[in-house]
Image 1: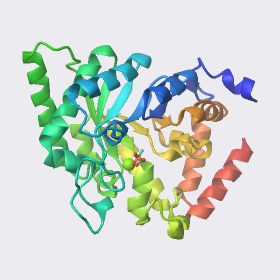
Image 2: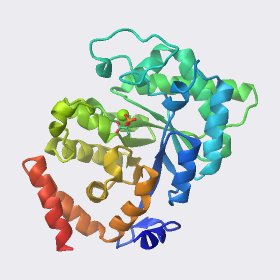
Image 3: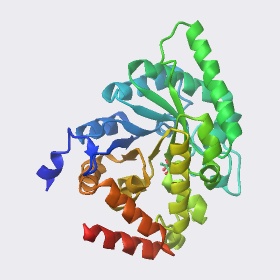
Image 4: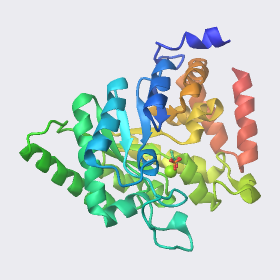
Length: 323
Ligand code: PEP
Ligand code: MG
């Protein structure tokens, strides 16, 4: 089995009828980027940058970040989506005192923190821009909930670009800027947001947490954390439709992308890219290769008609066996 899966290493991910799905890796370090390459991932769909902040005893400098990002870009220059700092919630920094909040997951985190701490944000944006001199880098904003956050971030990116230009420092002037769709408000208004960004990446971990109002770490209510809940399927469908209408790419970088069963549904919905932990890459490629788009779309349609998560999952198992 291992040998069979290893044949996918240098192969693209194609459905039986030849539609290509980009199978990328989620990484937090240089070592993980090497693993993605080793397992046949042709890009990085999510570089979680918070690790470099959490493993430091100070806000990492532009040079420190530049070195870290560009090393990873050099490993997989084909495409690297770098997510800007997603801190707060449960992710704290030893050298920074966050405000005390009743609900940190609904509080000052990710893009909200960055827009309130513009110097910290710009330091990171400059480092990311500089790393784009070594390969195809894209910038991704986490936890976006409205249009204003996108416009403000884009303004800061433009500021950083003109600074770098003045300093005669190399970067990709056409760098793409995208957002994570992981807050229900963003999914529901994705038709509006799509007009201002170059791509979407759906973060199902948080999208499920916020849609079902279930703490993703809380064992007491984990039975309510349901990827197959009709609301989640609908939110993903809505997001994909908004992306298609506006001719932008849409990927998924939550855990569901690396689940071969769920990856079938996402592919059936029309997702362009799936990003997952390195180990799952050959397994998902293998699964997708067994089905045509028509088959996957049919299975997806059946799932979307179900009344709850349990019946949707059963419909999936049934659909799988028909083939
Ligand atoms: C997500 O929310 O699905 C996601 C990919 O981001 P993280 O798990 O880092 O919150
Ligand atoms: Mg998230």
